[in-house]
Amino acid sequence: MIFDRIDRLTAYPNVPRAQRVAEYLAATDVASLTSGEHVIDGGDLFVRVLRYAPWEPGTNGFETHRRYADIQVVVSGAEIMRVVSAETLAPLKLWDDAGDCGFFACRAPERVSTILAEAGSFVVFFPGEAHEPGVRAEGLPGDVVKLVFKTKVA
Image (spheres, helix red, strand yellow):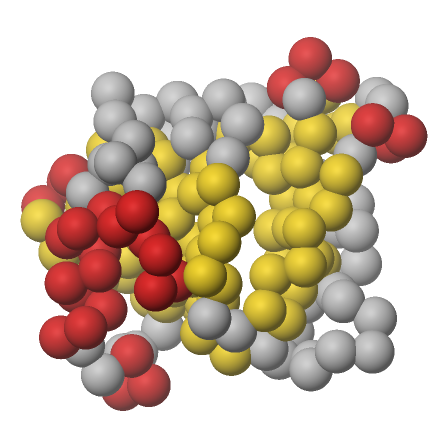
């Protein structure tokens, strides 16, 4: 996992397609993007544009991926992203192979850490790293606009 300001994305050579994501952000009017999925480089890189009001912790559970890393870029608003070690998880739903996603409950809530992701920040979650994004940040701006770049690694 990596957490930093978006202007430092290319400082991390281990982030797959970081340069391509930075180029996309520089060349795109993010405010004009419609919600939903936008293909950038076929199945190797695409972005999901999300607009939502964050929710209470535990609403959706923790998620992991096998084939894609997430580069989650907060465009506006703020949210908490909860993270925990994968060995603390218990399955909530069957693995969705087409969506490359599994959802899990955490059996050790005392081991959960939080990240406050605000506008202009990004978080990278590599395959296998359990995360629960989209959690409401008490006292901070309500609605969030976020770009989730899905970059193939396996």
